[in-house]
Length: 150
Image 1: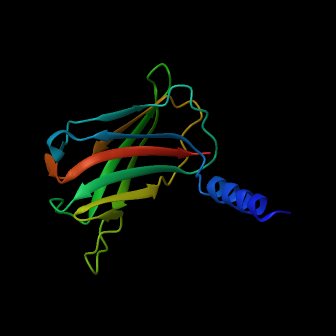
Image 2: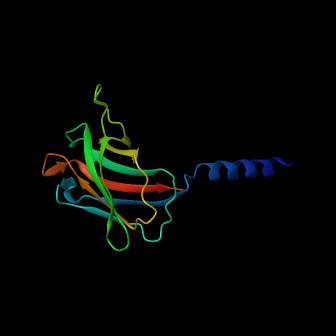
Image 3: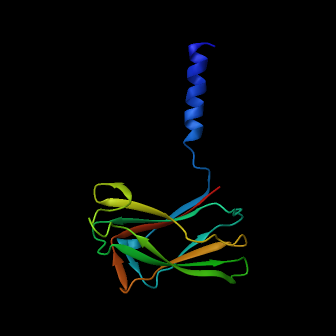
């Protein structure tokens, strides 16, 4: 086998092994980086086929965020807008002991992914996220996302 062919095969294997096989991913930007308690973020899954694989939520935040965690209300609905799930999730953004951000990022902006502690119902067509903190506005939240992996 020639060195070029071997190098080509190794490169192809390397590129394909880096994919996470996501079937859905979307982020919604928070206007003025100030997520209001009334501001619902709805993700339209359309015809996405849900499996028993991990579903992730993500929060992109900056140094203006004043808490170690973020409570999120996750509401899933079917095509008739019937509520299938209504769960409260606690997403830890900073290490409670060290105060270090737990997300990936650079500078003062981080993105924290976490697996949902439940599976979305296969009939789910939309997912709505609401901030559920004891503050009307959450400064420092830049975007919130949903990611579904195959």
